[in-house]
Length: 383
Image (cartoon, rainbow, N blue to C red; front, side, top):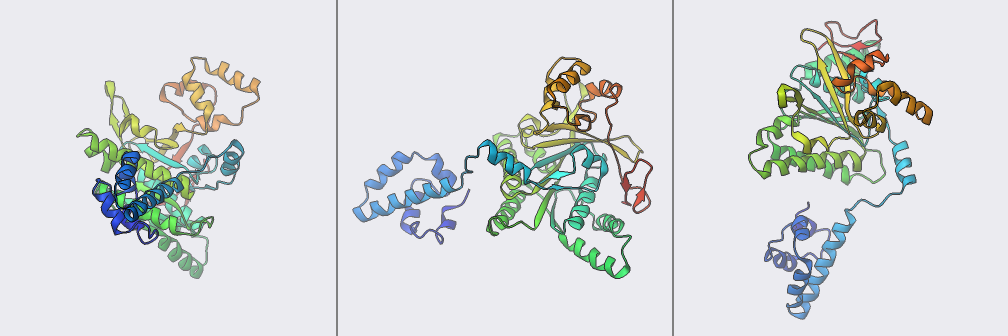
């Protein structure tokens, strides 16, 4: 929320007298204003001298107007459908992920990539950053919380994308792509919050309706900053929720794709599960699980959550056998290649999916050769 002092230049009615009046009641921001009893505040204002009373009431009205202007407008079904159809999908250059998500990362979506250590999460982030910056000639912001960003690895990815160009064109494109990927180290949660608010201010200051130059924001990893403070007190949980809503807000309001990584922890009965708990689980629109066998260059990508794939949630919530569920969908005429979207699904359902010839999407991580093509049609680049 905005500090009241920061609004004084844009709204002259919020003068020193009004700010002092608010401060005397413990109000310093819009958030404090919302938490206060407005009737009591107006009552205090009416006790002032006539000229001061008018100023305080005008100030209260102005603040309420500012708060009201920040609300998202109501949208009907047609508006929502048109908005969804106008969203662009950013190809990641990784065939497995693009096939699974029907093209790649959708703008306006908050995507989470979860996986154990060394499962390839950072490699996916770097590869996607290089490919999207190159293909869409846009800016990619990379917030590095655990020193995982490597300019050399990014350079290898970019060189793999440009290998067919002539030397002069290759050098020019290489500089453009590398300059388009902005990395900022972030060492604690407070700094992350400040940086995200700075990004929001930058995006908000751009002309409304103009296509933003930044199209992808990456946070690798969000859990490394949040997990250490969870469980200590309610402050840690509140900070996590605040960061989650801010990331989602950036995606939705400014039409960018937001990608974050999260690690795995041991849950009940020794079963691995994504970190940050149930409250965080509701934050991302899409949650992908990345796994890899030790010593193997192949990763398996599967969907844990997708707000647009209603049939996946329906299947997992029903006790119907797989073939009966598929028959129900076919009878309803709603089958639209959901075999692609289901992928491996939840581990408990893996055997059923394999017997039904569901496609298993494999993501090949970079091998020792730049831009090497493989028999399965995937592409890999040197780390």
